[in-house]
Amino acid sequence: MSTPTRAFVGRLSELDVFDPLGDKVGRVRDVVVTFSVTRTRPRAIGLVVEVPGRRRVFVPMTRVTSVEGGQVITTGLVNMRRFEQRPNETLVVAELFERQVQVRTEDGDVVPATVQDVGVEQLGPRGWNVTRVAVRLEVSRPSRLGRLGRRRGETFVAPVEDVRGLRDASEGQGAAKLLETYEDLKPADLAEVIHDLTPQRRAEVAAALTDERLADVIEELPEDDQVEILVGLEVGRAADVLEAMEPDDAADLLSELPPERQEELLEKMDADEAADLRRLLTYDENTAGGLMTTEPVILGPEASIAEALAVVRRQELSTALACTVFVCRPPLETPTGKFLGVVHIQRLLREAPHQPIGGILDKDVEPLLPTASLGQVTRMLATYDLVGMPVVDEDGHLLGAVTVDDVLDHILPDDWREERHDVVSHTEVSSG
Image 1 (tube, rainbow, N blue to C red):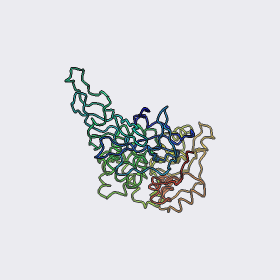
Image 2: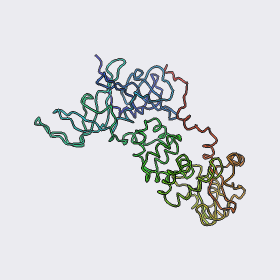
Image 3: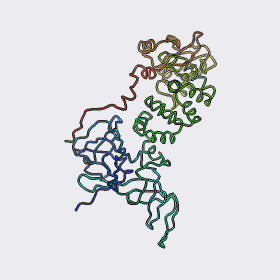
Image 4: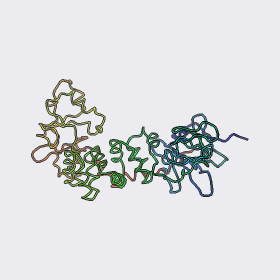
């Protein structure tokens, strides 16, 4: 009789997946299980596998032939349709890790614990079940049987039958394990993960993210998800997240809220940050004023090329914003003094570091008025092969800058973010 195949999901979730010919299919990101009132053990029905392009697809456990040797081997065809969780399905990493449960110890006591990992086992040619749960005790329990009892914080493995509350979410369920699993993802990819979660789980993950990380992720989410998350935050924290967002994205999000909620959040924000957003909210979203960010790279003409290069190297700057330095007279915060011209990053790289940037200005870039239409902005960027355009008022003071990524957000269909999440490939990858 062959030995059953066993594995803990925490280990599985980092393994590469290969087809029988040895070609890599992707990497396991989660395991899908289902619960039933007629079964004491949840059934593991498939893997969520991340394939090239950061898309996650579903691989049935019936296609898994081995989880040995630090890799997962599959057989047959892998359907490349994007995975969509069904109502009766539970994601182990995303939903069970860090769940608060009750566990029966060896001496029969039932004590509170936290799920650390989940063990699955192949019990037949077509059946994988959850059989074990690794838990961390939340209280110390001396043994009544004369043995040394278990201590708070201790981790041990219990049969799944001895764990209560695994199926039902609890208010204390944390998101730390999920975020640890996906900590290497870019904001757009983490946004896709969060988009797939239930509203409750999305709120838990949002609560666990830092303000800066949450701001980056919100900017990549569909509009409905953005509003849902922001409205679910405490007012003070929502204001902090808005401050961490790009001003144009924050203004777009605020515009989707009722006026009274807008005002409540603006009142909680830093006065200067709120003033920028109030100004942006006065412009139509399909004009240069509605598209622009109020925080481009702005320096005075006396700044050296070395100083300019140091500024554009800042990690928090987007690629589009880092490509152009806008040169103005003081004050250097929008609205600035007189706008003088721009310096492109390629020019900065070609000149001596000690030179002032005022001597290498490109004055041929025609600034836009905030009332310029989306069509005008698009034509200007395309005609002159620019990444960013200055936006000035009638007196020539810089109000902000429109970058090509802002324009793309508005010329793509309104639901393009949803389409990105719902993209479906009808391609089947053959395993031989």
